[in-house]
Image (cartoon, rainbow over all chains, first blue to last red; front, side, top):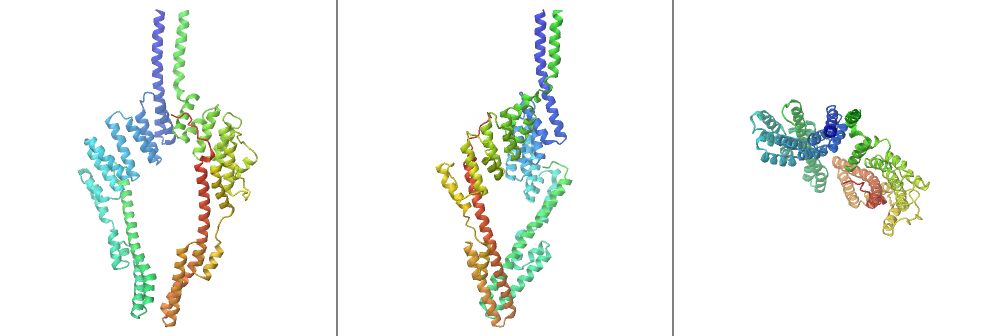
Length: 277
Length: 283
């Protein structure tokens, strides 16, 4: 009888040991979670790594990898974050977990502007998870926004009724942008016109004035049959200012477009309430 | 009575069993295992934090701590940690890496002084450390003369070392003053002197042509164009002098850069004269 009692107690004890180990793992995980919530990301990563290392049953692998990735992302270590989201995906147990990890990888690729990777991954998600097509469209739209391709972004968002307003917003941005090619072409015909077009009036006047002066002197020398003078003025002065005018027109148009894109992104960051990278 | 004694033991085991494992992930042995795991994962920053939590560090742990510091480019800390391993079982490898840390930190004077004062030199790796010391002297251009002793280097290395020493001993610099003066006398000549041939010939032709046009326009009473060409030729002439001086500076800076890069390449390709790094039992 006594032997049986001891035997049962020992069984109870060994079971308890297992429970204690699980308790401890749970405590360790809670500790890591707490650090994560307190935004102490460096320490949170260490503690989550400890959880993974000692978690022989891989119970907390997915959450730990996922949180490590989020912590790296918070520290702007995007490549590391992608690595850990991939590990989270590998240790995921459910379709939702896999999808979450995949979308996080997409978002990071959008943020670091590796658009083709983001788009490729979205294509795969679309074929594997057809029920998530709306999310795929949303992220595809964002990928195009970060690629500065507002027209393609508008086309994507247009596919979903609830996102039509953002499609219109993207269309407006596209329309309000300056055409770099047009700015250059009009500067070929009238120096300074490209700068006027992009609103840089002083630069436009200067280009027009200098090119006009050197054109006059080049022609004047030619008329006076001082051909060599004409060639030299044309080459060293007129051509230099004429070329500069075209380059300026291009540069200003690009800079203005950049401002428009940045303002639009800032607006979306503050006012768009839906899912965004 | 006997029964009570057995139950007392069992319940005390349960009681202590409950309280002990709470921190078992943070016991000294588990911290060490976890630190080694981080070290193998190359997460050196976190490995350092964990190694520092270990109270009685063994030599191997101290060595890994020192390496971790070296890997995150904290060379002051790594040198200090390697030095702590003097007279231990890992002194040889620590000595090598003590010198490597000084080299990587570009503390060449400190490296040279330590070597010359025979401070922490492993006998086993004396030849390796000698090479590091000599390369540091070449890199820092410290006490190099034509009697520089190449003896420590292998025959295959001696030719490269000889070229590097010559580059440091007799640098083929271009004089900035000479370049400026030459371009003042004949536009473009300073640039040709600094081996910038294309720019030199262009300067000569453009300045000459513009000057000719200026004189010619004044001769034909075209005052406005005469002044325009005079302004242009002055601009090119002064620009050519300034450009020649700058060209000499760039030439010299490039010369130094190439020398330093050649030394870096030489020592990097030879793995800082270190034997192959241990794999630290990382899986």
